[in-house]
Length: 307
Image 1 (cartoon, rainbow, N blue to C red):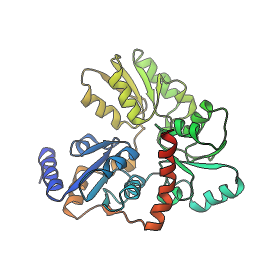
Image 2: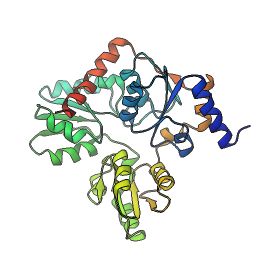
Image 3: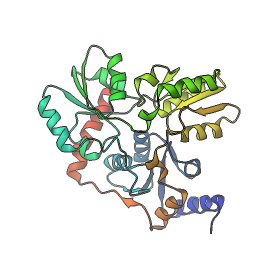
């Protein structure tokens, strides 16, 4: 039997002994973040993982994140912390459906949010993150953009790039889209001195009310730079907890109590332990052909973000 501190200490010992780099998405619980080598967003974690000396990567997140890590680090063993941890948004569109959309819109470049499967990425022209999407779409030479799968993020970009033509599918994060204007009104009433920080995966009725609109890492960076003392957080409620730990003298409030990614919550600290002792998790396998095909849209993202 372990208590939390003892389990964390054993995980720290095991990852060193077994030469494992632990990557934790910011939506993981705080006890998991405390044993991670890197904490951040999905793409940022995969980029950091490329340069580490460890030969095994343990991704505490969801499946598309582990796939991205494998695409960028094919020589390394990549373990997903919980085999059932998927992403509803990443799985909303099938390869066959995307191929049909491309057939119907042959003069549109397909821009894929990073929250897509490796199979979908093979069919896309450019990949983007919530932090980089605006810059990359602006830098792309194509004028016609088919943005998948998040229509809320896509519409936010389209408003700022009026010189381009956009088409969307009816997709998005089912967790963020559950936040409503009523939640905003309630939170503003309860916390009139707090700034509202919102993720662009939220619906427009919510995002237009924000004092700051940006990615999860952007929200956390905004808090770090801000002189304000109170914040309403419009993204996964784990971020409220993390910010409370980091800035104990400031106050943080959840915009909606139901903004919780259940796939992220599947991974527990004991799951991390089982992955390290070899009795849990799932190794991610991608053929070299499929990896290279999926890498094309990520390489295009890097190209257009450097212009």
